[in-house]
Image 1: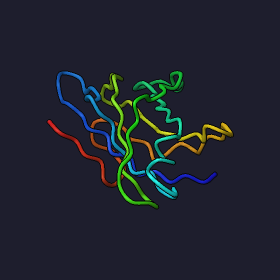
Image 2: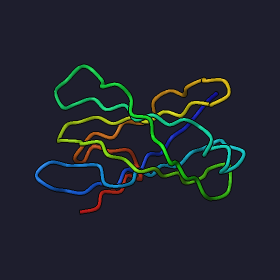
Image 3: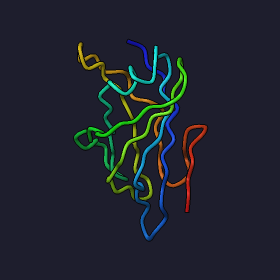
Image 4: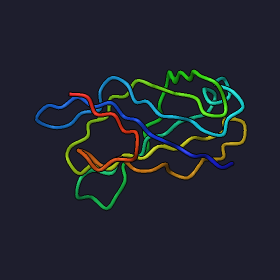
Length: 120
């Protein structure tokens, strides 16, 4: 299973940067929004200055909309991200359990993949 991600993560800026209520990304190469919504999505967070990635955070209540082959997906998130933290996203096919490669990493505050949306 080949997955391509364009990750958009909405942020709120405080004394540290915190992922806001919603993470949004484009899910590519799918037959429908329903198929994309059925994947299991995981966020991999590597704290600033750490060589070790935390255990993945499984996103729940994922909603996908739009027209295939690329649909917009979103999910509520409650992961703290301080300057220098790296966040990556994967998708896994639920029936087979096959997990995609990690998407392009977001590194707070400003080193980000194309299309990243940062909101104050």
